Image 1 (cartoon, rainbow, N blue to C red):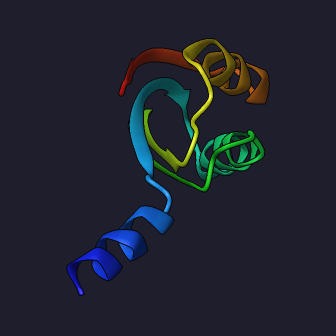
Image 2: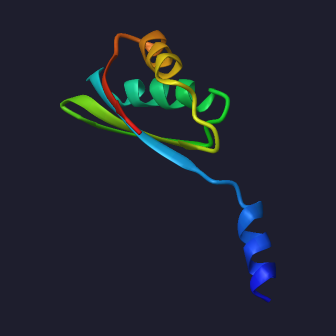
Length: 88
């Protein structure tokens, strides 16, 4: 029975999560643009962006998350936004 539980647990993909501290988020459309563009990246399963007074935090979850350069370029290409830091 223990072996069966171990097999079931191995079948579930391991999810990684990172947070990105962002600058330049002035409105809800900023949140939508960043959320949509990060969600389009391969390996990303879920994105949540919270904004507060021009800054924001994006929480990105997925099985195989992109590298920091791809994440940074995606945010910058979404608009006039800046990645302050990425915490893995």
